[in-house]
Each structure stands twice: as structure tokens, then as C-alpha cells.
Image (cartoon, rainbow, N blue to C red; front, top):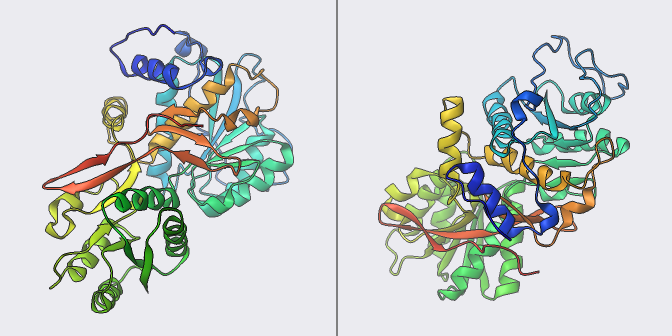
Length: 403
């Protein structure tokens, strides 16, 4: 297939996507974006009273007219309240995706989830949207999916909670399970054999520990000890001290932020020779503390590649005057995903969710990804290592999926 060379971000993205996807996923771009008015449309004149309850069936006063040439997509993110900055960054990223691809066949309308995700979903459905992108928080997904399932509207959620996935809800967030599996696979090639785990109490810690157990079964090794601690206080240091005193391990999974990981690392390595290998999770991605801390030298973690992120972030800052939140790429990639499928999606018809299961996958800013039959995004992850004053790619992310 021939590729059109272009110096800009959109041209690069189009040609890269063409190399990964089958021809039927390519989307013809048009220069008529601005004339067609294809943009994220904020509900700026929403009433100050709470949104209608989920049983609402009538279109809102701000509902857009029937669109015969564009697909109606709802974006459910917080645009007010404490998480407004994150939600706005995701909304900005969806606008950016439309502009970068010159898309003229999507109309995306944003709905504020901060005053009630269920009500926002019900209103989005009443307004005629055929696909929901979002919400962001895991506890909002169940509320949204209840209203969406009854209407036959699929949900592509930005959460990383895999238990929320179903045949109608597709979880797009970066999960600790995949990060831990990739890291264990890699460190086994470097001689890791006796693992210990330092995990916080609560759901994230339980998921991380279960993922470590599965990875050890799959790739070999032994889990010799585990310690838990209350998140948010200095008990991580006490747990690390207990782990150090017990000994018998060569590799430690620290399933928490880079900051708490550093506190644990100082304690784990005190008086030990050789020092244990440290493995983090996707939570370490982008944290500058890693490369500034001697105790983190040689530490590893797996995450989506940042190879394309800098170009995305620079373009975002040029357009919107601020740096994006790292999670904003989920909004951008969700639009790219929708565009790939829209070529075979007739306006007014239900969204063809079966197309999301393409084994060849899709390409976004965060690299290749595809949805499993369980509705969870499987991602090509790279292994990163703290070396000197940098965090380098110790093992690059795969460029696609083998089957």
C-alpha cells in the first residue's frame, strides 16, 4: 500500500495506522472539518439544577438536530468539580484527534459526569448518541452501563478496572495486570527466580498480587513472601523492613506510586548485598523521582511507550496552552478507534461493536492495542529501566500483535 508522506503529526499518524491495520479500517480524511462544525460541543448552557434522573426519555433542550451525515458520539467526563482539569484534558484531546484527522463524519458532545454519571448517560442516550466514550472513574462505569445497555449503546470506558468489562463495556485504561505480567516475563530472562511482593491494602494491591501469582505460574519462579500495608502513611517502610528481615528473595514487586516505591526501596536495600531487583507497575510511568533517586537504580516497570507521546504533548500544548494529563491520550485514541470503525458504520445505525474485536488491533498515541473477547484493552508494553539519570527502554514494545 502506498503512503502519503507528510511532515505533520496527522500525516505521520495516518501512515503509521495504515501499516498496522487492515485496509478496511482506513478512514478517508476530509478537509471540511471546520466548515462542517465537527468538534466537541460542551453543554455550556446546562441547567444549574441536578441533571434529569436516568429514566429520562425526552431529548434535552440543548439536544442537537438530527444529523444525517455524522455519527453522534457522547463523551462522558467530569468538566466541573475536583476532577474537571483531567476531564477537560480528555475532552481537549478528542477535539485534537478530530482536527488532526480532518474528520467530518463524527459529532462528539460532552456530558458532565461530576453531578451524576447515570443522569449524564441517560441524557446522552436521549439525545441520540450511539456510542459512549467514558466515563473516567470506575465507580461511574456501572452507573453508565446500566442506562447504556438498555438502549443498546456500547461504552468504551477510560477506567482500568477489568472487572467492569463485558460484552457492552470495553475497558480502555492501562491495567496493573498487564504491566506486571510483562515485567515478570522480562526479569525472568535476567535471572529473577525468587519473588517478594510489597502491596497496599485494598483492591489495587489485591489485583497486583493476583497478577504476580499468575505471571509466576506462567513464566516460572517462586513467590517467597508478601507484605501488605495501609496506603497513604509510613507503614510502607515498616512493611519493607519486615520483608528485608525475612530475606530469601532476589526481586521485589512494589505495587504503588514511585514516591512510596522510593521509600520502600531505601529500606529494602539497607545493608543488603547484593541489592534486590525492584519492579514497579504502570503507576511509575512519567514520574521524574525515579531518575533522581540512587535507590531506584536498576528498577524496572512496564508501561505504554512514550515514543509518540512527546509529539502529542507538544501539539496539545500549542493548541490549548497547557501540558496535558498523561491520561488524555485515552480520549485521543478512542476517537481514532471510532474513526477506524466508522467507515463501515452507517449513520443512524447501532455502533458495530463486533468490529472492536479485530485481532490485528488498532494504533494510537500509546501504541498498538486491541480488545479481548472479555472487553479489556490488550496493549503492547515496553519494559523501562532506571539507568543513571534517565529512564530508558530496556525492552521495546512490540509493533503489533502476532495473532
